[in-house]
Length: 496
Image (cartoon, rainbow, N blue to C red; front, side):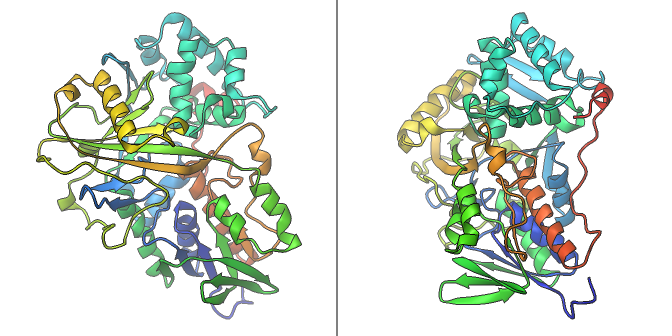
């Protein structure tokens, strides 16, 4: 720490999601006194879980996964000591209605050819589809195309993609990764996902799934900050701030407090309401007004018997896109910490729709599955009953055992403002961590991270904001960002 500080600088981190937790942990490690404020009674933000009052079950807000290319997220897990709570998979199973499976997995061939043998065997695509996809991949491999205002769907059609290739490959991968429809996705956003996860190396495409509820995973980060002299304040909303010559004053309901620095790690629509009513704030407010959100819906179903042996699967040609077999993925409660209880006011997320059918069956030997619908605009206005009926009808097309299984209980969780929309031109409106106020910095997956709205993007934003503060405070060589995974095989020939 620079000698001009007689004591550890005080840093306020507003927001207990991944961006705020990453910034807080990095700064606490570097000798700063961190106070983290979270308006809800739990940490994790959108990556959270709670005990559902109607079912008595612990549910995640929405299933979150990571890939091997998420180097900063993995570094964050390692920092707080939860890396072993991630289970890694090298195989993805694509299911067609009727149950026919195609497995995509790496081979010993050098990147970007490592998945080519499995891809060629995939029954869900025919030869014209595969040739078209191979041609588009060849166009994306050398470098990420610039943003010329074109949607990725237009780019795909311009590059000769068949409708089946678009529906069963590009849409399946990218809508899940970017939480937006292809006709609203920018070319650089889509290209970045494909290059980092599919082309760069076999290790980059591995999928990691948490084996514990999300709040249990991220509450450890709060303990990490506290053990290093910091403080975590839950149920502590921040209304706004006032920038001062040598610090920042946070404004709370009924009070205020001063800090040397502040990281505002909140959703962009929340930040817009926090900005002071001054001319200095107007450019940032106008920038934030250019950002839009896209929804995600999670459908949780409990059956009285096993409906599949698969841990997870990609579901083709229907509304539901992924199946995660939570009763196989999540460790038994007897080996976990006690869950937060929504009944006690500790864990109910918002916005969400949380309803359940009565518990009328024994779950021992049953299946608990979560179905995910990204960019779920068509479901936002549907009722819980309509969504459950739709999900059951489609699920039974993929898993014959589900046709005879009894649904014991269910719930639907809608995240209406889940992520920012990566539409063409949006990167021009994603702000850097620095602001017009020298002691105020921004973090969030919607900031200029170079990544889409992912957990990796959120952690990167937190580390970038923390680096800015450390350098202003005199730690000139402070670096928290982890390097990207290096390209392998033939991908090393391209500059990216």
